[in-house]
Length: 278
Length: 274
Image (cartoon, rainbow over all chains, first blue to last red; front, side, top):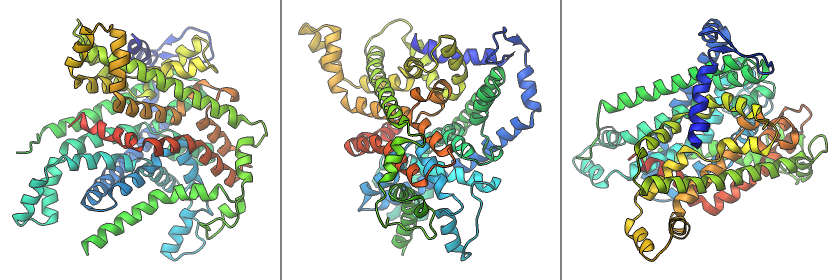
């Protein structure tokens, strides 16, 4: 009952609404316009911008998240000491909410903030402003850093659990047979880690597509919205600032379709090679 | 040599992860001038406690922080309680009883898990508005009273619960309600704690729904308070970090008290796939 009411019905309703032109505040009955909302969207540069921006953000963040968390998990599992400390340390950003995370990084990326100081110290160029919150490319990079910072520990722990479920004897056997660390990883550990990798990539990807808080806070604090106008932010603005409910619904349906498609694609790719421990 | 490289990478990552947290705490104790000082001083010269007063008082001196904090705590607690109770009951039913349509219900629940909130929020918003739920606790709480993931989690956990114990309780004359209350709840503690933390955290984090539904400042929550605070041009940077510290306190307490279950959440998630 409850699910029917609060999950299934809204989805259908969103689909239904996406075919109408409806103004949030008007009491006039919604007007049926068929695929009009979709047509409008496909012709609107804002929509294509949102799509591109979401693609850039998801692609970049996804690659960094999966890559970094895999490397961290491998490194941490190979340590004999401090394992628990390292896990908790990398997981610690989980205690701050996404909004707080965005607020912290907002100050770090301040023209006089630590990010500029660090880059300038490393590059030996004192006093240069890298325009983290203004230049489009830098702004996108900045939101990615916030997101990776917040979630990398979470995926690291999932990977560590996956690695610890691989029988040690297999890895040791490979080493005894004279395989290098590098070979052992690519021929033994990585293939056996496939289910975990699949899980992490599906979850991470959906997580990235759903990002909202960071982009919202950054744009509210004065950054240009264009380069970080991800679909979710665009849905919010379309619905709440311009009151185009039908159009916002069409947008969220498109977002859902993208998520479904990408998850399906990943499962397909993964299924082509089944894993076994034998 | 290899060990050095590994530690180097781990060290750089540690700085990246822990640096901003240290920055939050130290900056919360500095006057604004110090926060943007070049180079940044990682150890505060003096403790500028006024920041915390400023954070609680707000720029307009109307103490919305207190009200919003209470709102957030209340909402997250209410939603967590209801999620845990309803998920356990539903999960128990699905795990231990055979009835017609059970498979269909399971399928529905798994399908629901896939639907992100951003897809349903606009219709939910319209429903809530037409029911007159804007700016009310009902509007903030009702959409989250139970979630599919919770039911799924509890079902998976209870599947492994031995039937013999339940039968023994039945033979001893316990009613189903008593069994649920006396047997199932107490022995599901690890799964319940994990679910409770996950739910509490996601609610503590929730920005987008309160943003839609709560326009009046009395009804807003901490994430909204922080965004508004950050927007105000004359906000003191130190005070902003003080707000951030205060807003993180409940999670920090939970984290230190129950870090086992925090980390357990991620583990459990991977285990059910395995």
